[in-house]
Structures are given as C-alpha cells and as structure tokens.
Amino acid sequence: MNAYIATEYGALNSQPVFDAFRAGISLHGDNICDDYRNADVIIIWSFLFTGRMAGNKTLWDYARKKQIPVVIIEVGALKRGESWKVGIDGINNIATWIDPFQENRLQNKFGIIPSHFKTEGEFITIFGQRPDSQQWAGMPDLSDWMTSIIEEVRLWSDFPIVVRPHPRDKLTDWSFLNKFSELYFDMPQPMEGTYDSFNHIDILARTALAVNYSSGPSIQAALMGVPVLCSHDSLAWDISIKSAQFINKWIPPSDEEINNWSQMISHTEWFVDEMSDGTVWKHLREKLCDYD
Image (cartoon, rainbow, N blue to C red; front, side):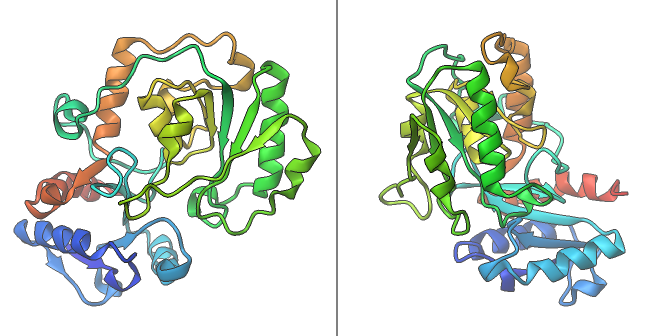
C-alpha cells in the first residue's frame, strides 16, 4: 500500500505525530510515497482546511474525486495533547474508526472511568463549534443554529443558559445574543502549561446539560457524567439525549451501553508509541483494505 503523508500542511505540534505514524507504516512494509497522486491512502492533519492546513483541501478534493481514503489525524478529546484521533474520512461519528480490540482500554490506557450521569447543575451550557471546520460543512450560519437551539431548549427547560463559543471561532458575530434575556456568555480560557487546552472542565463541573453539535465538549461532558444533547454526527450520540423535548424525561444509559460506548470511544484516539510500534497502522490498515 502506498501512503502519502501531508507533513507540509500540519499544525505546529504535528511533526512528532507524523514521524511516529510514518515509522508504524514502514514496520508493516508499506511505502511512503512522495506524490499524493501515486497514493492508495492520503494522511492529513485535522479536518480544518484553513491556516497551516489550507493545502489539505486540494488533497481532500482529489481523494473524493478518485475515491481513495483519507486518514485524518486530529487533536484528541480524551488526553488532549497526548492522544490523537485517527479516523478515516472524518473525526466525528461520520468517520470510520478502528474496531475495538483492547478490553477496558479507556481505563487501562487513558486512566479514565466514566462518571455516573448527574441530575443536578446550575445551568445549561451550549458549546459552539468552528464554523470553518469540515465538521460544520453543510450546516447553517452558526448564529442561526445557536438561535434555534436556545429557543428549543427554553421550550423544555427553565435552567439559565450559558453560551460558550469555540475558542478558535474568529468568524461569528455574537451580538445576536443581545436579543435574549437571562443569557450568559462565557469565553473559554487557555489552561496554563498546555499547548492549546481550555478550561472546559471548570464549566462542565457546574453544568446540568451540555449542548454541542459534534465536537470535543460533548465527549468530555459525557465522560464527566453531564447529560449531553448533541447531533447524530457527535461521538457522544450513542449515550446522549436525542432531542430537547426529552430533557426532562431522559433515562440515563445502562452500564452495558456506557461500557460499549467507552470501548468505541477509546479506540478513536491513540498515543504516539502506539503509532510508532505499528499498532495503529496494523488495525487501521484492515479498515483501509475494505475501503469502498
């Protein structure tokens, strides 16, 4: 199998991850090619075609046209800055992921045990997304979506609402929120000593319900035992509240459902050593060989 790794369009912290991925591919005897037009699979950084990653748009469009898979490496939500999402043709619930093969991986490898879902909290937090991300492709203007969500949630809940934008959203004009009363705006703050982590944990600890379309906060909320209202595209969908009308009627998932979800989510992210020793590529390759 010929693999092209788009190292030239990676984030500043991508090089060690790309190097580990390259080592793992080579261990299995596959070839790293210099021209993406000779590749059977293209490997890119992030599902965001802007800034340093803008050049990945050409590769993505080429792969769609030629019907070849794109492996996307993205910052993880389980151990941000330490573990990395590795999905085929996406990084949320629309992606193809490695089939679970390690029992209790979430606890044993990540040291995470999902909390029981809580029933208390001070407010509902709506987490925004980057409107220039491919995760948002085909969606309405973020302000329109946010307006709709606020109105829908208020039909079914009296909790105060906090709106928290994506920390890297530079496009949305948030003045539209002025038409709502009793609404709070909370800007994420960088966590000291980290590359690009933000203080989501602080607000989730006070949150009764997290609302998010399909990005990292929905996963973090579910792991902390905060009920989640999200879209089918979210990796938290399987254990989420499916519609705002069920906010007050929701029955938390069973232990079996949480365990199955934990197994799934723990196989969406990987550490550098698992990339370099070939573990990730071995199991990802099985999926790539079945690509249609």
